Image (cartoon, rainbow over all chains, first blue to last red; front, side, top):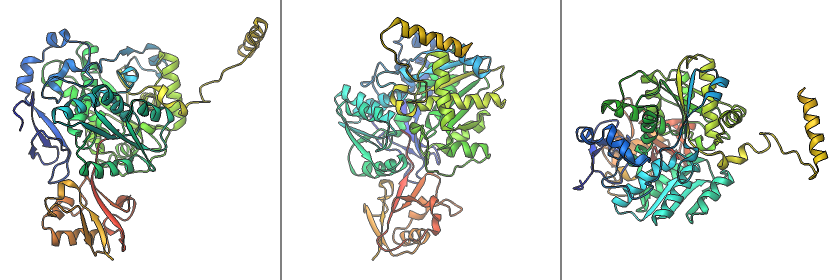
Length: 418
Length: 91
């Protein structure tokens, strides 16, 4: 064990509890269970108190005691503390009393929540002496690894399904990362990367760095609590790909409660998927505690993981918190994107459409009572997935630069709307 | 001609660091039993108490997840490649 481990104590298997040193390793040698960081909460409790947090810069690192780096972060120290918007117009359209949008479409620097996990993973990778970083990605993670690695002077390899949206491909290439397109879906990219990670001495953020990486997601939950005035929301709707974000949102609520930063309360964490890739939602609706892998077919490519690594734990979190899951079709995803844009001026990527669409279903069916308060986690920017909505969100009317033509157009519209 | 099994890093301590092992089995289940005979202890890493493949272990035959095939009854033929891979996080 390294001498200075910050507030971390060890890595621990979530299945059998065996402990491991704080190195770049991600699965238990005994049962392949995922490893998770164990913290010294007694020490954290002494330094992480509200006035201290409030005195720090408005980034995710204001909660640094609960993030797994030994020293000060060296990558991405401007990430996080994105706006929490009170979404009254969308609340009315969805038919719920109080609605908030956690808006990670404007997360720094790569416009998705992935900057949270990547700044942790790369800071930790540097501490462990790595100079090359890599990831298997559905797009957003690749963008974030490429951008943050460039800024930190690290060499980056990103592996993506070859059929990704062009915006996400360009958004990785521009930073000078090595982008490898794999002819297959994400689960196949993942499988290949597991094999590559075993062979090369690289920090694969979501393979051998996963225990650290995944913890970065907690910052989204910490911020929600602080921005709500130090309280845990009644309902949180979280998009699910691997299911990791959902489990870490619950962990953030548990940690803040345990540390006395938020009062104990009852809360529900709900999961959102696209119908074309809904292994976790299907299992939740059937009351199962395990899922059956699927082959993804959805426009929500950032959520298209057919074999979700944290699916089992995501199901457990929903069960424990009385949360529900549901899934929406591609048309409902586009409607969700439009509603969020029209009501709140926020342009989310397809995963955001999934979250809004599922929230609508949960409210209509009463699984989220109309009189309650809800937070939607919106995790990525719509400019990255233009392909999914081109031609489906209205179209431009063209006229000559002539006032007469413009007035004719308006008059025509008056007739149509009258 | 035998079938190749790709051994993941966490299990290589059991296979004397061998990355690629050859077996003669006709199904995935038999391949696991054969591995166990040659590398005692490997079976309990892969299978749980009920004999099912553990929750966080993924087994592939020529890049296809055996859960899309016939699980442990999935046949393997000469030249096939079997991969054992831990589940990994999203992206």
